[in-house]
Length: 389
Image (cartoon, rainbow, N blue to C red; front, side):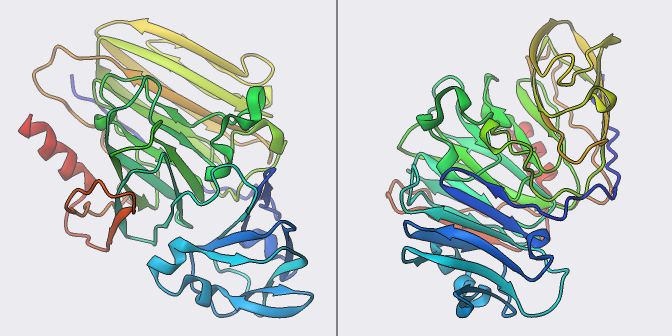
């Protein structure tokens, strides 16, 4: 039986004006935080700042005096990845001289943060990136609606790689029981086949070890949920952070609903879900072969469930009712007896460029390539890979 995907994402108006998310050692600011053209940020211990846009009219200031513009921070992709270090001080602000509709991501990290100095990459609209690095963590920033990660390579321990909807400073054991929930934690037999779609401006991949590994990433304007046997797919509400210590803070969010429905031949299905501030009136409606698995903070704030069968009919539906709710669901599919593997259809407006290729390296220095090619789609890449098996 072919896998059938019906994907629909509707735009709503439940968007919080303030999108700032403050972590113990970092902050993420976006367009909504400059609603009065100024937004303070903390750099008491010294910090590094990263931006994903090259605007001249948005700048960093201290005590009202301009220090550096986004364009100067950004420079080109390589310097944007390195960020700009600021000395310890008070009264730092972001300031916008004019305009009010320019999307951006601003990530400021304290010099005392866990994992300080981990590599950061900037992914521009319509581009893709192949990162072959030896660092355990890799953070990616983008203002685009959706970030797609795929093609993992490496020798991973159980549970890895993991993907967090936050910067490298939260991917740490420092927080103990309050640690952030990843949007993806590998539980499939073959993470290389998984394509993970995340609606977050800042994403960190935890490979689980220091050594040779890689991942490919690209951006899309709409969700892209691929389902194949022996792989995983992830659904998240836009704005999801996943860290208990940030309270009800979320990233900017424009998506008011998520809907998907598909059928897939697979020997098993494992489900894991986590929610924060999700009210019963806006519960996620999840069905598996007719069984009702709706969840919210009132019913099941988090749960796992295992199924054994030959075919799975799955539907997921959610409509935002409050501005502070967030959730994530991961589906892990087992093997199929079918001789061929099929993918879901994707939303017609979703456009995904091809991945670039680069010569492998084992150097500690990250090897990261970017491309703006739009000749092939990721679907073609994956299908060709399957045919070559």
